[in-house]
Amino acid sequence: MNWLDAILLGLLQGLTEFLPVSSSAHLRIFGDLVGSADPGAAFTAITQLGTETAVLIVFWKDIVRIIGRWARALPVVPTDRRLPSSDPDARMGWMIIVGSIPIAVLGLLLEDWIDSSFRNLWITVGMLALFGILLGAADRLCRQTQTLDAMTWRDAVLFGLAQAMALIPGVSRSGGTITMGRLLGYTREAAARYSFLLAMPAVFASGLYKVVKVVAGGESVDAGPTAVATVIAFGVGWACIIWFLKLISTKSYMPFVWYRIVLALVVAVLLLTGVLDAGGASPVALAQAAGALA
Image (cartoon, rainbow, N blue to C red; front, side, top):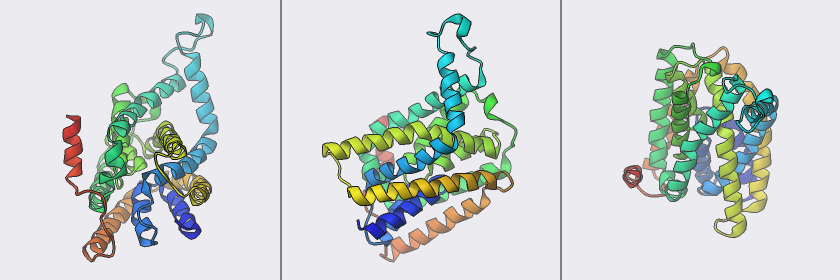
């Protein structure tokens, strides 16, 4: 990977990480188009550290408050200083922990498929279209009444399972969780806010895990270009978070739905004409992975 490719991919990561369009799909597709081939799961995970650092800064006060009040509600805290477990911020801390479990478990179990088979571009095309349609249907048909204060344990698990689907490029971490939130009746703002908070443990853990593997020699990336891409992704991602939260307060998700469908069609044409190489294993990898977990 050269420096120009790194800059372009960093910009792309920052622009797409928080939108329901799948940043991993964009890096996979445009990595081929700019001539650097598939940048790989390690590159994707490490550059996501940049965008999640932007989340950390934007939501810093909320994160500090949630962690602090969650800690004060633990049983080890003396009774006279302990917060009730029903405290909204303490509950949110537990909801984030519970919601992070599915992606942690499945990420480890399916690591080989994530790094190879799931990166087949035909799988990406299918996921872009399918989850775009699901997002559009959920946003148009479902109510908008639930707030994060009313989140239940069932909802946290369902949000977590939706986030875990983003292990497959094309699904979108934010797209999956926002779609689930809309299906459960949460407002657009509530679904997006929880999506950002829920992503942090998983993305930081995944990115740092890949950094350790690179340092240990288990995987390889171009260190300099990857670092540049990560820094650029941070700056662009910061601006994109602020813009996105303002956008969804007044607009629907339909522009993103149509974008996903059009992108899926364009990539399918590029694959059929030989401009792009699908790479990885065939789409039956999804069925094989499901069978391995059964």
